[in-house]
Image (cartoon, rainbow, N blue to C red; front, side):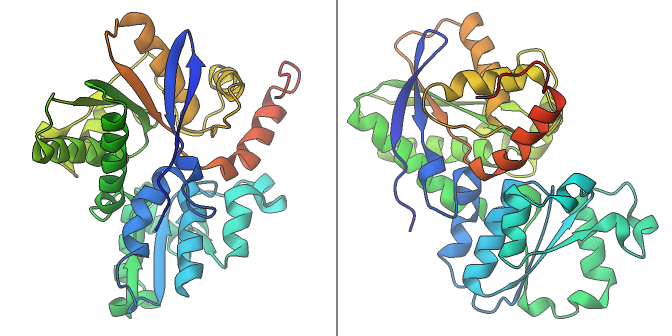
Length: 326
């Protein structure tokens, strides 16, 4: 059982911002991945002998899944579309930690049938491999988790997050609360908004507590994010998507993102370098263009600090002549 993550305050662009410290949930699981994979830690999967996943070689989910597999005694195969030569020669961060946990990281570009899967989404690549190769003939003992944990099982842990947020708001006797978090696949934001709506309706609080979930895209734009929502929840539960006019490419180094990361880390809380900088840039724009009255803002920390061990050196190499590293 994860502990309830604490909430701390920080000053952000002249506003008091409350930070839901999901990076402190557990020594081996943190942030949205801890919430998404909570289900697999607390339900019976004793029949499983092999775990299959996919994503980036530097993904937070790679490390979290490797911990899950190690704890459960499962073999773990993880498919990636690319591994940089630098990372191969200098293993570090999530990649190195996952290998230490026994992860078998497979570059799909080097598979003998790579031409057959060229251009396919990684999740589709995994399904092709599961159906077309004898490696996974024993499907009775197989557990496959989609990229980023985007599946219905993620709702279990995110429901717990919703409960914690409601309880925190009640203790503070709040009436209006805005919850903000950046999105990759949108799984956490989607299920969080759904659970908050449903749980608040069941509680029938007096006075009425209103909690609105806002999110932003860090991967493929707003339309992509809505498409991801549509595969998980009914439209009535969609969180509100906001933007600052910039389109962000996941994992691409941006001076704006690094400057924002340095700024927010001055609070004494370390944030990660993939999702959080985009989240804070969009939140900054939102606060400048909207007037909030009697509304507190709760930012959900994305966890994944281990990934900074690979992201930070990349930033320093790219901007070494102009960055004063924090």
